[in-house]
Image (cartoon, rainbow, N blue to C red; front, top):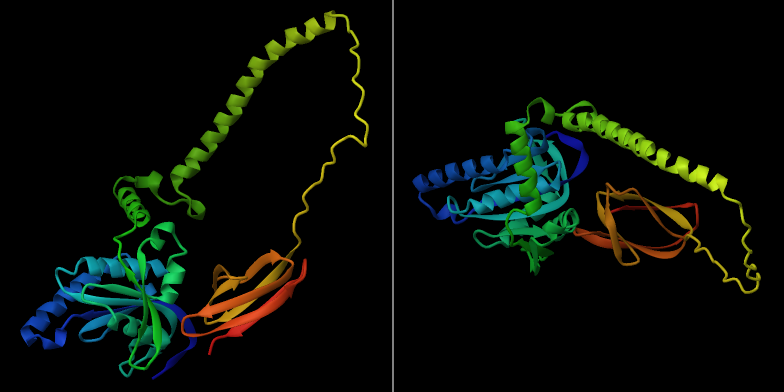
Length: 335
């Protein structure tokens, strides 16, 4: 078996047909065909280069190497089609490695897919559960996504390993529905104008930009032409009038003037992160994102506590004193 030299952090969806092994062979065939149709429908919007599907016999494991949202919405689609075939679903975000099996086909191994199987095993029929690592990443992407999840507590697998799990209790978020509807309308009615132009901008935007500029310039010229005639008589009338000096009010003594103090901006320093395979970064107890992709953070100079979490390994805590204008490097590999 030839293994890849890279370890990837991917979202893994594990699916299992409920009580598949207890069914007669003829019914198993019917369930498997229905399951394959449901999964194919769920993956229609995911490019083939961004996913790897493993057939597990009584279900499947799908590794998403791109956007974590793809795993979420594919799982929701299969779950919502549960009337056709009953399934249990689990999603995890973790490290995996690409390998080739004995037949030369691409396969996935690693803790990421193992935990996905464990999360799925905790689910009830028709239930979709996700791991803490997947929840922490996806819930930060949109306010709508945060309302999808409900914390179900801790579960212990057969290897006496604990997993924090969250159930997905909502339907497809409104933001995703609107995005899908917009793309469908563009595909149907857009034509040349709705298509993408240079640098990825729509041609409609490229047409509208110069038109808006011309309108702004024209409006400014028109306003100037209106204002100039009004200002000319005012100036000539002022020239005819005798200038009368007005008494000047005494200046306020300097000691009585209210002092104006400008608020000084806090001095900032940089924290440069190098985390493998991944970890959630907390500065003084507040989450600042996941690294990678997060590489650099700017924070006020002074002492700070930096905590890096990975649901698979013990957390890493570092006490640092950040200096203004300087970089403090934090390197950690979870093992």
